[in-house]
Image (tube, rainbow, N blue to C red):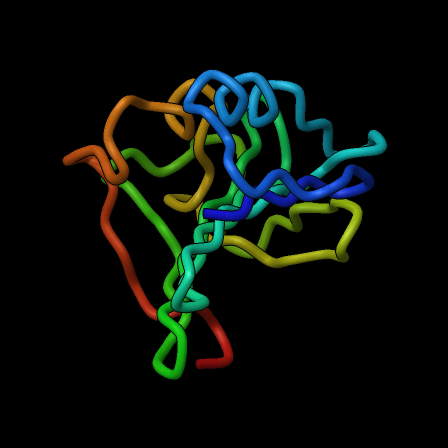
Length: 121
């Protein structure tokens, strides 16, 4: 596995604790606003944002990119609200906003996380 964090050197053997700490330290307007974890086949999961405004996507190499969502749409972030971070601006749906604590759970994909094709795919 390779763990990349914006503005930092890649870690080719990250521990779960290192990943958790790094994801909790992401800041939308900081030096590190996104991170990705890539396996040997080129599949990856990426997180962008921070605090109560995180986005999660996964990519299956040679296939498709998926955006995570859940069953509790944000009452303060309607569809079309923009996530601004170091790699750009992404319009989000109200059910695609995650809190950092939800992103760093102990399982790869907790049962409340669902997936839909990411826009543009």
